[in-house]
Figure 1 (cartoon, rainbow, N blue to C red):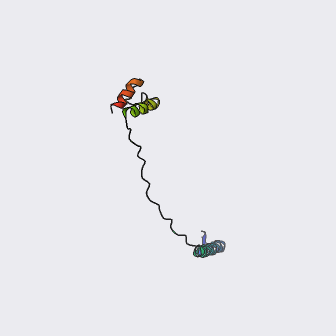
Figure 2 (cartoon, rainbow, N blue to C red):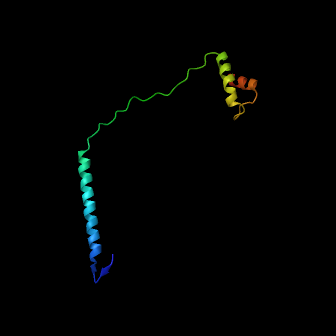
Figure 3 (cartoon, rainbow, N blue to C red):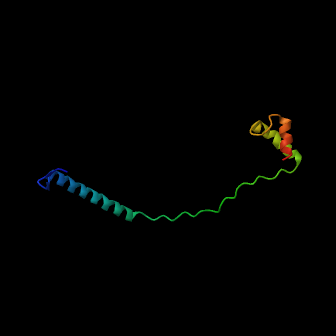
Amino acid sequence: MRMIGGKIERPVLVCLAALALVFSALGAEQAAAQEALPRTPLIEQGPAVAPYNPPALGSPSDSVTQSDQSFQFNRGVGNNPANRDEYVREQLNK
């Protein structure tokens, strides 16, 4: 702000007053709009979802079949053998 002799210049004072009126008018409009908004009820949460537990393998035949099918995905990953027969034997012994 520019001050001349301890007084604020008139254009600056007029701008500040105009801004104050605009902001007070906007605040009043927003307050009126908030009062008119309807209240929505809170949404109730449903029951908790239980995690999926796959069925246990019933027989060694099922275990061999599952190992044979998963070999392509797990071959050589980590400590898994790269040979199909060794992989199936290792999985069957777990």
